Image 1: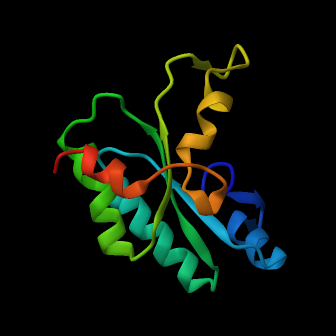
Image 2: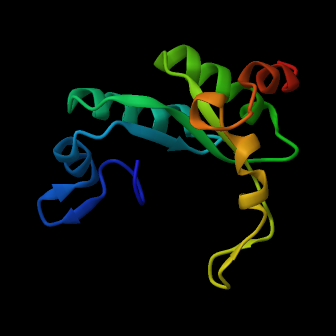
Length: 133
């Protein structure tokens, strides 16, 4: 999706979406897990489809270790409403500190954060079942 999202301008008249289109590159939509995620994701999917972009799937970023009701139900609703697969779930990591250059445990956890088609070991069915919805 790129830094900041699909509709972030790279210059005065060229968006991240334009770059993906020019490169004929499929995209991955990264969304947050909580309140507003469904709206954000649906708007991004709609925008990508209108531009003729191929969407590989959705990654949910910064998924809380103790999810609330919203975080528990959003992944399944996003799948249902978009018809797209969730191909990754990256859990929150309180050790990440951009200002200090600390990437936390992202390297150690990356394989378990993505589905096998993306080189990982995440079983999305088991993840969804673990949310007890």
